[in-house]
Image (cartoon, rainbow, N blue to C red; front, side, top):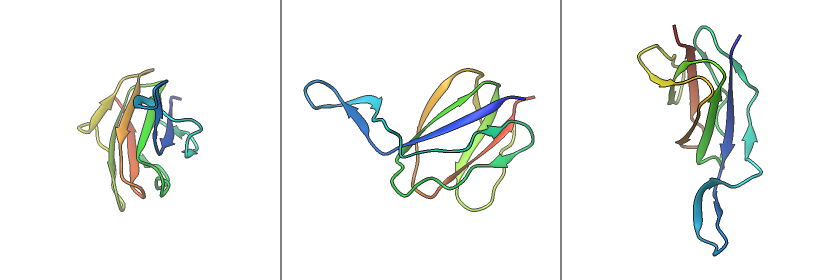
Length: 101
């Protein structure tokens, strides 16, 4: 079975001159329990400090970000296997994911 990892970040890291760079500032705000790809499922709500997330799956999948109760479909945003994606999000939102078929 394939897995999706969700890592939550609050800020970008500074470069040598102190300017924000397009690199997340570690340590992360939160690291969610990985989701096993299969039928659609939802993540936990993002932390109150979370402003963007890093998604990485070892299998192809589709995801959608929102609030409340919702499901992902194969028509939602695709994520290729072994690719990392950074997404800006709002605190309290969730991610739903489904394995690509």
